[in-house]
Length: 339
Image (cartoon, rainbow, N blue to C red; front, side, top):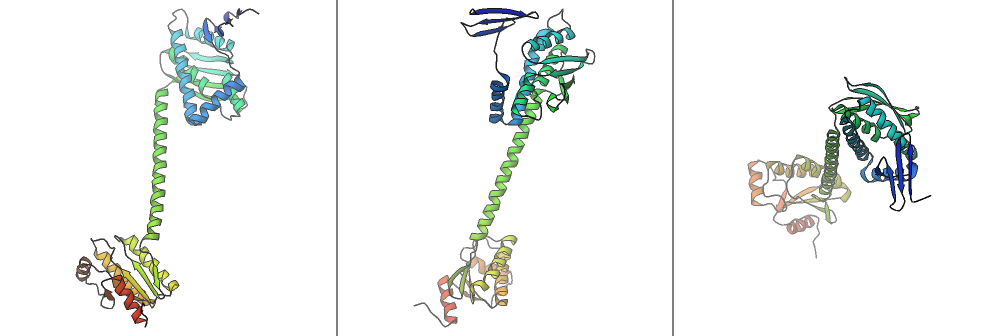
């Protein structure tokens, strides 16, 4: 065999120039790939990188735009009707290994038609991939072809797929406002929305973790000596945080066998509300009910004013300036002292 070979099959020209590594189909450079291996690997790689949904849109968009180029080319040939162009295109595609496509019910007035696709290269790739749903490249490709031939946007509906066990796929085509650009934008918005939802979920998770951490760190119960525990009040207390502090403190006092509960108010927020002052009174009264005496330390001038204005009675609770004084007092009441 020489380095240059030419053959004509059913009126179509095929040529090879082995010195330049060329395969020429109908006067233009072409390329040959094995469908079930090389082409399948190509499609698998695109899906792996882009994801199945995005890659499906890529194939659909590419198929449509390539078909549009073909349709617009034949539409400019004045002596060729739409039906003749359709026959020329499908025969040419068949000779190039695209499978057998037949056009039915073509109506130029309504700009509708039905296509039967049998044993296409896309179907063979899908079989090799083990797919259960057919690809969109060829269905969209013929939508592009007839958009060019009819001079209006044509879209499609898959009636049946060969991959489902039918003899061939059936695709219906009709005028539509659906465009590949719209589909691209819709997917972009969907992905953006999914990303926002994902980020919101992450934020919610972090907030939940932070709240749990705050619960653990906020106002911890510290057993400083036998029978004496200290609970430092830190920051600002709203209704939820106050309830948590009250429940946590009262539920843990018995386990520490606490005779004295020292509430250290040094770390409270300077903007002390009446709600916070009321919380201190509630803890003191509740602790008394389970046999634990409450001692307050670190009362600021601001807090003392709020307590007076709120008409809260803390006369039954011993108050000291510093935590050290409170601990010494608790020990003294038990007949002990720090040596």
